[in-house]
Length: 379
Length: 76
Image (tube, rainbow over all chains, first blue to last red; front, side):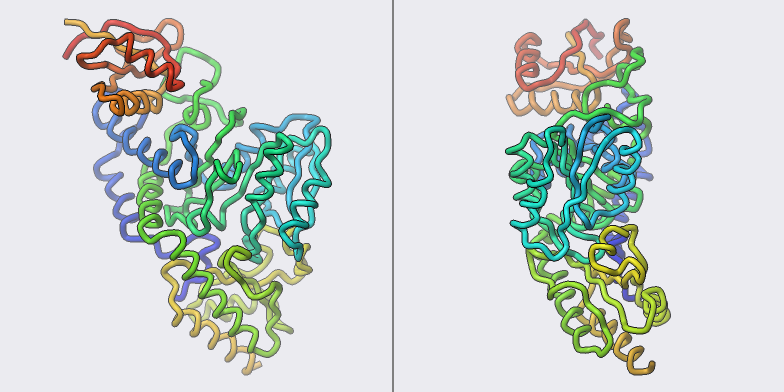
């Protein structure tokens, strides 16, 4: 199989990640932060080490700011619902995933207002201007993705972070498509809440996510944290405040191995490799009659390694199914991002999305292009 | 024999405290707080080995660790 659906989750997972998950179940099957026996403490130590590793990797100073979640979507919900209250206003971009838009819509019904800033086809400075122009007296935060999960465009988060700092706004970044691929430094980029899909660019198991919170936030889930158990109120201290219930120990072991894997290879190498592959895809697709592309040629710093296309006269689902029949895994449709498709004029057709990983080869890309070319010529 | 335990808010605080003290050359261990606190309930503590507990406590407070209290523990 040629797997080009890495924007959904990476495949394959590194052997070190699979081994770490297995090892956790074999040797670390105890509940961390709940008991005093050696095994429980040992599991807690491993989890703390993972927090420290992730904090360091993403430019956050404190290990306890790293909160493990079931997904990036949960992380975004925790951040948005943890800081916004009735009367607050928030800004977001025109290419957001439903992971941002749906919580905002739910919050709107509770009296939180939001505005969408157009970013498609705009230069970075115009995007920042767009955000600046829509800040109101009651704007509390800006929430946006680092890169589009459909079209790969990268938003100028360093500059948006600077704007947030200047105006005293909270800055929430959805890094689902960039964590582990593009450099992210929370402190330098003024990111208050970083939402991470660790099962994507960090090669961890599915069902894992991370929220790194450099500011305090309210809870939407309360329950047992292993300590302060006589109190009926949720503890204030991170990360336990945000991690009620038993954490996903095998998943966290997988995150640790995944971050170590990415660190060893380096994000610079991974990004270079992946962007070269999508450039090859882009150049090849451009040569095929009837193929529609929606962005300029992907370039470093402007794009993540995600590419969308269509073929005149065929639905995106038909193209994806043809590729599936040839052993190529892609994703068609709206990619849970109707807003992004609307911004690019593909809300009725959807697109076929191609997304490589560090394991994808040039040969994989060439074969995919051959299948698409053959399909077009045959019809 | 008894020993002095410094109570902290969570296992994460306990590990962080142990690491802070270690970075200052102070050896310590993490333990479950032996007596359930009447105020907050169960928790974790730091047992400082061969070092002044008051100084260790002061180092931890300075590093932002929330100290919940102290107690005597039974030496193992």
